[in-house]
Image 1 (tube, helix red, strand yellow):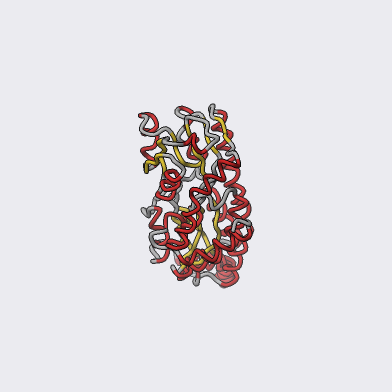
Image 2 (cartoon, helix red, strand yellow):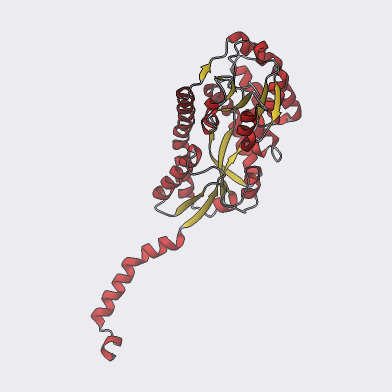
Length: 337
């Protein structure tokens, strides 16, 4: 027993050397900053897949100093419209935030949802050129740093009938997800009904509505081919996810690792936009395979839709004065002034 307690000089030196070898690993483990990231979307959603890839690359590039732990499916208890406030108040260090759900706190984040402001993802990229500085100011005001933003796929009118003139839409009862879509559909002659997604399939099966305003991705989720025959590429509204980090947390990260994280976000963002475009393409193919037909909107019909809803752009700028400069700059570049 005594022999085992009394270490010889040689044994002690070997033990000391071992401790020195192990020290960097111990220091690194102790200095790891673990950051839960809240998202309401499930693991299978492409936005969640994107943010998990971002987290993995951040961990690798910072040699484990920053570890983002993605908490999907709303498991942290924060609902969509609460995400911006949750990060602002430090209730969670990071989140993947749907911009149009934050308009109660920051109306400016609803610009993309203005009907027919953008007609394609290419248009949306131009709009983001002017919106991004505004988004960055908004998240900074809310004690956050913006890392990247990725759009949701575009919206369609999923209907029982094929409509190639605006008159063909008259009186059709259609489910809409929000007031912007409700006002738009009413302006183009439809009878819009505000219904949560969870009640949409029941409304379709009972005949309470004869159409749905939503993305092709949701159309696949709802197996719309069981109820509807056509989906119309109106591309009438957009929205985006914004990944942010609380600034008190951000300050705990070394300047070198801050740069690594920012550079990674800038590198991955274009790829993440491509995943959104791919999700739309894949879902369109699934709707067609299910028996639905894609309808491209004739130019005359699109022009009439834009004409009838043009006041919604003006109304938004009056309601949210800060939006006037970026919206007008975008319209000028698109030669739509």
